Each structure stands twice: as C-alpha cells, then as structure tokens.
Length: 295
Image (tube, rainbow, N blue to C red):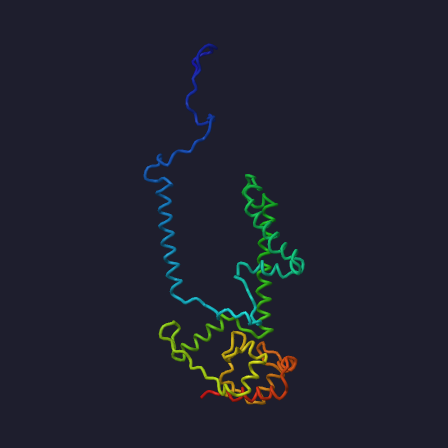
C-alpha cells in the first residue's frame, strides 16, 4: 500500500480476495483433511474389494437356491428345435437374418465381423473421438444422435427377434426344451418324486414288446427311428413310442403315418415308400406299434 504520491515509494499489495492469483491450481493432498479422507491404495481399494466379496457371496447364495433350468442333452438329429441366443445378443441375431448380411460367405463375413467390429470399435474410440468439454447431451448433437440411433436400433431388433420367435413356436406348435423339462420335473414332483437328483423316483418305462417280431426290423429301416430313436424312447423332438398301443389303435397309427401329427410330425408314408419299404411292411409296422403296451 502507498502513503503518498512519490513515484519511487515502494508499493506493497496486501491480500485481497478480488485479486486473481496466477499459477497452477494444485488440489490439496488427502492428508490435508485428517479423518475425512484416506489414501486410495491400499485403504480405499481394500474396502471396495471387501464390499465386492460380500456381494459375490450373496449372488452365489441366490444361485445355489434354485437348480439351473437345464434342457435336454444335445441331439443333433433334432430338426424341430429353434436355436436362440441369450437376450443380450437378440439384436445381433435378428440383424444377421436380413438378406444384405446373409446368403453368401462375403455377406456373412460383413454382417458378423465387419459391421459389429465397426460398432464396438467406435464405442471404444468414442472418448478419443469426442474430446469436447461440453457434457450436456443436447449440446453434443453428433454423439447424442449416434447414441439414440444405436439404442433405438438395439431395442427394435430385440423386440422383432423375440416376436418372430414366439410366432415360430405358435406356428410349429413347439414348446421350448427348458420349459418342457421344467414342466416334466413339476409333474414328477407332484406324482411323488423330488426335483433334486438324490432320491427322485424315476417313472417306470415300458419295455419293448416283441423285439423278435419282423415289425421291429421294419421300424429300424423306417424314418421313424430318426426322431423316436432305435430304442423307442423318443427325443426332445418326438415322444416315446413305448406303450403307444395303450393310446392308439393300429388304424390310428397308420393314419398318423399317412397324415402326420402335431406338433412337428409330417406325413411319413410316402418318404418310407421312397426309402424302399412296401405298403405291406408299413402295415406290419403299424400293427407292431399297436402291440407296444405297458405290461
């Protein structure tokens, strides 16, 4: 501060909050706040790990409370199954159905590798490409527009894929394997069994009647064996034929062979004729299946 008009007098400025200070603004160290802050490594990080371990144990407890909804063992001969990915890949699954990314090898490569690679690569590079200081989304039109378009596209493709899947199940009169397996487990439980593996009562399976009958030889040559298996126990795509004589007569079985039966079974008479079987052999097959009764 000055006391006169002497130009040679030394002027000293006292502290004033209105005077802007120059130089880098270095934030204070955590030690400047005793009792209110702590060092990140290892104190704060150790606490985060402990909380993560508690959360992980909680998730494991919930997982062990209920058995996983497993389907049937994989069956490569089952042509009725509709393959479906997990829900978070439904949008990509639907995208790959469109003609411009399917058909030939080049289109499949573009649809499955190039386009998803560009999309996920752009997501990784977003922090480096969009370096603006503005954080309000309406002040960042390009980044915000790409975000909204991507979000809407993912939601739309997911909904379309799931709707189409439900329509396919309805048209083909199919029940997903995990639901069918769960219903069977509930039925077994209600019948006196248990849902666990230990102590469960297994349902009695009827034996094959008259294995030495010529009809069994015809069955092994027919198309029936593809879905119903050589031992007549069936598969996820077709029911067991053991004890089928208790449900259908010979004429009814022949009618099923000629006209098919829902769900999923098409007429098998002509395919068997084309395979080399005669009408007499198919009649013999229907008679043998009608004799498959529980003892």
